[in-house]
Length: 393
Image 1 (cartoon, one colour):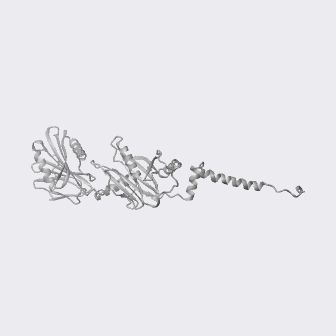
Image 2: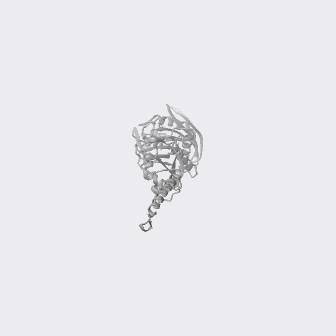
Image 3: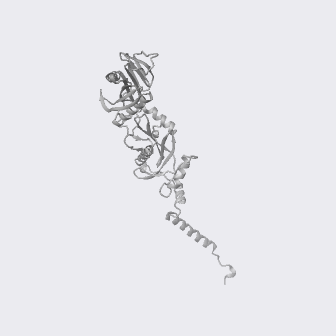
């Protein structure tokens, strides 16, 4: 008989158990008891105490794939080790379809409490905005019961919101005149992910989601984390930005956006089909996440683009991925305004540009020379004396 991992006090005997965080209702199978359940997970044991079942979830709707299956297998293995088991080995990961549902299956073997050989069987599949993980544990001699338990419990679970079709979620555009395209793996959040996206934007960027002035995208990962991208407009106009003024404008923008923060100068980036010069800053890390912020001039002022990594994995991969996505998002910007969204420059700003950055330009020297010549002629006429009466014959 399998030693119980679960407390058997206060057994839940409800016929239906609703787990609000994952939006799933479980109908209690005959011959099973539920010692504990909550809004986010469930534990069950059969009447013979030979199989234990656990149901939980990870955030984000991540389609089952070989890579995702391996990640979920590692997650299950970590759980077994945390519970005091050892010699955990991965026997199989596979992506299959059952009842029209794509799912990842994981088989692990381990030594229960360092003594008896045991097995874990797991299925992982999507509902709206979540990935569910149903696993069964039994002694190796009763592994067929673990497999049967998975089938029994899976057939008793009903999601209030099935998995959302992820195709067509690549419309990254605002109502204020700019859009972009992103690398594979990025998409709009589905309904069940909006709250988590909103939380990330608020905590990491101190910014609210604005459906008219911003677009946002997520890159979910199998471990329940996600990278975030958000792009919004701000009505900031700074005049001409070209190879002559870029450095000076960069200093002004850094002071404007990051006053009092020690920050390296921006990287010069070409944005949009006309390769207009833009600015890409590396911001201080927040909650162990790498953050980039792009500033691109266009006809509504500036398009600000933030890219936030998942929590760092200890290597350089996160920085490289964030840098690559930030470049792609800015390079692929499209502008729908007049003159392809050209950043407006008034007469005063243009004159300031000439006098600040182009003093030696013929456009400045020519008029200046003409003005000096004119002033010289005026001065010559003013200083030229007419002869007095005593000088006349």
